Image (cartoon, rainbow, N blue to C red; front, side):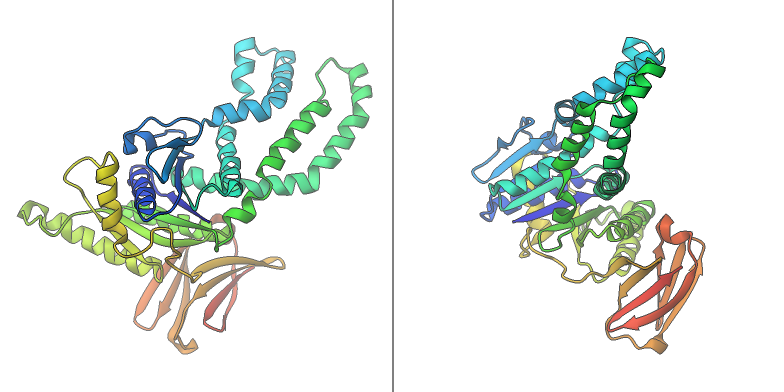
Length: 386
């Protein structure tokens, strides 16, 4: 069973690429479901079918789903929501304001992770294709299991015991509502639904992320940061899809400069993400809507490659915690120590290997630290941040 996560900057065409991948895989005989975790759903528009909150059959081997995260939120979080409403009402907020403020922004999207876990456990599908939200939301979503796990392991039970002991005293001192066992039970149910998601999505044998980019400077810069952050949290990226490339048959002089710019950016993409494979998708002359157009796009992107395959088996970049330090590990095969030079420029790490230079955009957790040293471990360069 495989899970593919598609993400990218808003507007790059990740929904279309995700849908085309699912269609291509289903055509090759895989039982496939494609689902959207993006609150601004457009998956049904791309497939040109009606999709509901539950898996909907599209073809013999392809299902689709647009998760109603708000419904999941209300099912699992209602006890907590009612408690927050009571506290806000006690504090003087009006009924309408209390209801609106009780809904924590972005929390409803997290329940999509639980649905991915349930689909994987069901054994109903060979491939789960996930159309994720734009990159910033995706990173926040995928980092949540770590944050929530830390809270549950270190804070939750202690807070629950303290509240239980203090509740009789607080009820005599104040009329403010105090969280009861039903509230803490709801938080526990919420965590239990997500428990195991982190292990599932960070297992490179099961899950891979694919970055969808356009050959544009700002898009590529964001994709590089996304790649670093996904590596930081232990998620595996196995390919980059360069979407909306101008086809060779466009020979009008008006497009000459545009094509040259795209070619330069594509070369930069290949260099920046090596050794990840960079797949190409040309700009279509028509809207990519419906099964026929998506099938053609999937064939164009993957060719003879299996869309559900592991397109890259190497972790080109990862960040490991070693004691109090963080170590950035880079795959550099066939490189001698004397051929490597390192530099630092604000938020970027500059790596020169022979005549080639590559810059890595550092996440905040590394940007704030000083470089303590670098060493080779086999074919990996390890840079220590103190």
